[in-house]
Length: 357
Image (cartoon, rainbow, N blue to C red; front, side, top):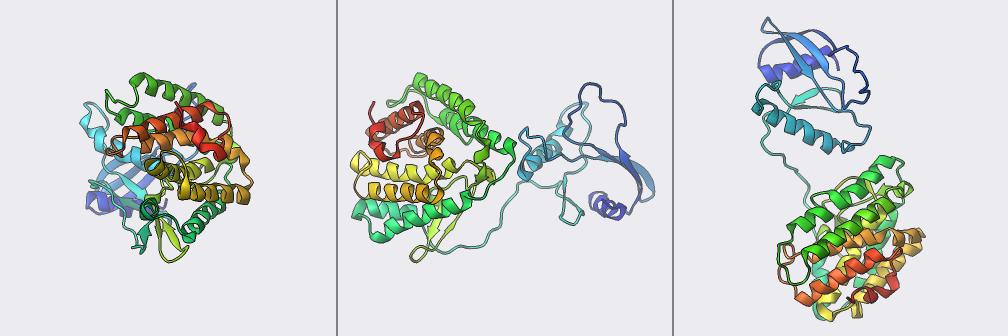
């Protein structure tokens, strides 16, 4: 950070002429036994319209894990701190929340109320409409080819590897404990359901925790992922031309996440129509899975995918997300979840064996 850049930023905050008179590390004191910290604050001395002032600039370190791996994690914490410091008695006051640009300049975001995303427009039709059509009218050869295109796309992005072990451990931990994932979904299920009991949900949760400990050491599998690769996040145009939308929960993760996300929906639609994986949906599911395994050679994904199938099963069985499902479909989905979690390796050629109670 250059003094001129700091001065320009402080001018945004104070709306006064600023002259930076000095900077230095805050608190050059011994930290005792606590050697790890999330950041090193910078003390800034400056004049604001000639009046002497000081302020402390604090950011967060990127390494070390602890849920601070992504830029958005660190932004979330700093935004929260700015919003809440002043509401606690005797707490140091937050003056502003800002961000650094790529060229080292500082910008104020302290008056933000909510954040938004501006994106380009994408033409096309959401892929779930294909599945609705297949359920009513059957599949065409193009539908089978599209399943190949989608699994080929996953094979391509999953070939891009990363060696940050903490990101893999976090991805597996978040899968179980994050509010958008397994535990959060379970908490959203109403009481007194006629297709699953609270005790059964608790048992599934315990199995998922066991799976977390089984998978967290598989850090060599870390790869580029979409993170929410389902039919509502894919838009097809003519033929095999498509665009994906709304990647989620981090840039790097486990290939089984994306694979299970789409495959679950082929199973889900077939269950609603046929009570099992059958007819055209089985043909599409088989092409999707076999093309992926052929292109990647990643047969180990079948030893990882049961936990991710549990997550996706909880999504499509949810009375919140899908309120109009027949009870029989939900029962079979929960049988699928429980049986998959009991298998060390998912038998993708015998999916129907997982639906029995």
